[in-house]
Length: 507
Image (tube, helix red, strand yellow):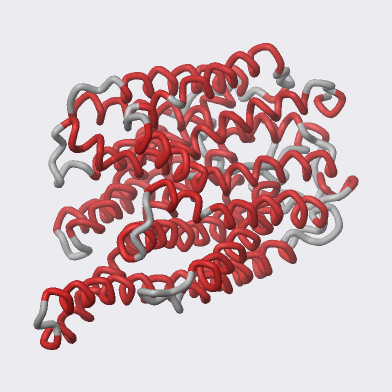
């Protein structure tokens, strides 16, 4: 079986490289967007679609991508996803107008939806020894968590010193190296395939339901929560996803077997991780604006300002999470991890216009990274906990889906809260701002007021994540034979074929 495959550690290098590419893409394009918008003549009203087109395709097609990986074979899906992502990146970098750019971003999202669950489920079926799995997922978790911040540095550097188009072209060498490495190194266990027929109604209902949900939150950010189309999207999504669940309960070969969702440990991971991502992505955005607009940092300096968070994630994931995962129950890592991240958020509620980076922002980022890294490690390991090998792809897709939806919700929800607080502050203090200097000061103060109001919500969300992790997740430490048996799907544990678990990304 795969635990004796001498090439599994080499395979991890190429899987991690592909994961880094996908995670980088979520933030690297944000930094380049103002320059790309100007060059391509994209209107202010349409510029959000450069981000949204990717998010809709990625979030909407993840379950389908996970099922295709189970059907085709994860190695094949992984390589096809990488090649497609590279081609889409070339199209984005060569874009000569708005339509070509938006099409390229949607294509990137579609191939990312094939690539991400294939990568995660490959790890799940290749690393079956508890201690090795802990190390593998520690490395993978550090990349999944910290890659977005690396995207700020790389995106700022490429945009400032070369050209925004290089934020797309940089994906090509990543993809080529990872695809060639995967093709020649990865050896997937053949018995893990799911050859049952594709659930077409499930594909249509889940894809449209998730697209409607992600678009509803994205639109809420710009048009408001009471907008007719926003409400219509949420209602449509609820109807489609309810129909999807009913369909999955009845068909013989469901796209998403409900057993993947109903096992309490996996359910706890999907829910707590999705909520944590809401807090994390919203705060990422606010800190970027705070450092650039209020503190006057350049894009490159802003990227480097996030380095303490990356360091914290690496330590939390590879040192704390990896070392303790085989010794203590996952909930005793996840719940404290989310609470440490909440403590970092709590520090950020104290930011003011002239706050010191060294004494306030840096310690907050360290705590945020340390907590998230510690929590992500066991969360990834549990997200395919106890699933049969034939369901590994779709279980991996579920944790990606919870993160994608969490990212969309976080950006929209926390941005709306921040905007409301900013407007209220301006309204109540406008009378005193009679000079240009006073008006400029008021603008900065109102923005900081908005950020801190939203960050308080992020603190609360992380505390709820910790409570969910502690209450739902009841499996023991993942060491020895117990790693394969803490399964809620049957009292007798799982067989050799079922010793699978793991996953994550982000947007």
